Image (tube, rainbow, N blue to C red; front, top):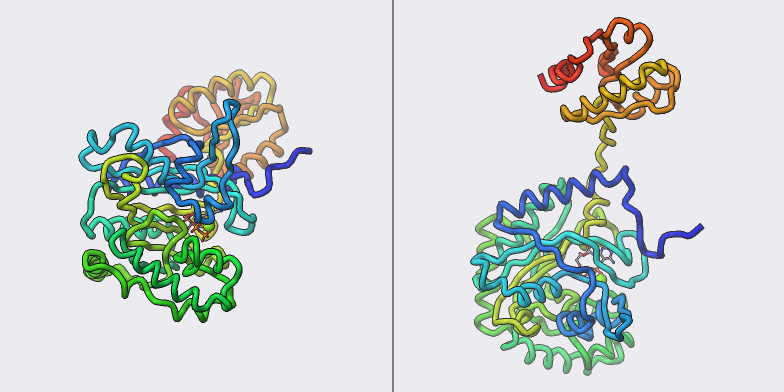
Length: 416
Ligand code: ATP
Ligand code: MG
């Protein structure tokens, strides 16, 4: 037997209802904030991610599925959505045709990580991006929408953490300050962090190695090294969050796993998730569009892990499989049942029919398992009289209903 690939999983029919609900909630809520859907390819030119996400990030350094196409060009399965969306915005000139450029995407992402609970090699994200607004109020609006979305999905147990990672004006100087502090403590750092001290010292801040935690707590903090503009932006984001009653905690170490972030970064975690506690993460990326060859257009967004969200939502009871189950009890009833099935489906009922000619008892058992609300019995008696026996499974009452009247009868019972 050939098995599914390690780190991938099937979303089976029994679970798919939960997925459809969180997808529907996203579409409904995001539309209220003026977002429209965008669908970009799941593979792109490798250069797009290398340049967009940053070569020293975990994603680009070790998590990408990269392969050579037959013409030798290098392609990569998208590890995240933002880079592809930014490419599409630039390529299709969307900033010049859309006066409020806000988009969302829902779909699979690919990262070659060690699979564990809540961490897969193919996983799914809901991704949101708003372009062209520099004001801090859009940061707050995006965060509010992210939390509103979690609430709409039924999540209550979560925490919002925010930080500012500065911008091109102030971050380089901070990075040097941080590097100097790290160099002075190299002996206390893991091999990974020693390397990152030279390549990308910010990454050391989100190290999870237990032996480094104490030292990291003593390192210079980004918020103390922000330029005036970034400091003001962050203060205004916080003031407006307070105004809207958005509870949050500042985490000085929240630099996030992608290099393109500027100023506001945020993450939502949930204790219900265990080790993989991050539900969604996002931030502002004011330089990214320009870095990827577009105009000087600001952006902010977030990505949410759907596996993790679905996992923590209370699993709803399985939905009934049909409104009506048709049970022909004699061979002569089958043609009638087939015609009736077409008529009822055209009237908008979900219908299943016994195709195997089973006896009454086994048909009733199956109807019960399918949680059918009604069973229509078509036996010899019924055929002779042109009346069908309709059993209401909710109360076990049954009535004879004339041929041709069934749809109206069921309509009245279900919606009347
Ligand atoms: P983590 O710290 O858990 O690795 P991340 O910082 O790599 O998360 P992002 O790149 O910000 O995650 O992606 C946003 C969200 O996507 C995460 O908060 C998480 O819910 C989800 N996610 C990321 N990687 C995976 C994965 N391999 N499997 C399942 N969900 C994932
Ligand atoms: Mg990760």
